[in-house]
Image (cartoon, rainbow, N blue to C red):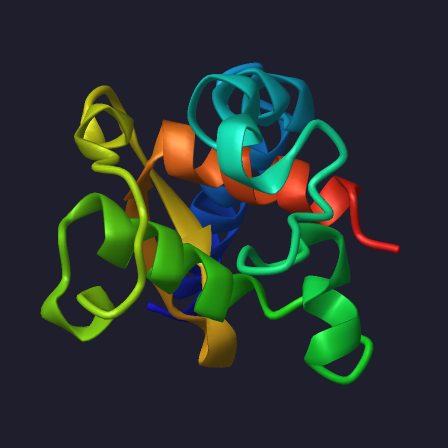
Length: 130
């Protein structure tokens, strides 16, 4: 019985690690999504402006560690029109919800499915942290 659990865990890790290598969830794919959806407000370099947050400082504002789960939740929430974000002016990200879902490992060893385009955008945002 124990070995079945080990194989299940290994299979889950392979699926999750495959998401990190997928061309659909890569930082380059995210850069293209950023260019189509975010650049008009946050700028080419992601530094925003007077009324728009600097996306290159997400990790710095979180104490030096990129808060992936929080960013994914926020992007997914914007995309789904979450009520908690009604005071934030963001475009409708409905198109980012289309396509395949990929599981992302969250804290405490759990995983959660996200649209691949949101994962890619998150990967790009991670890559531009300073």
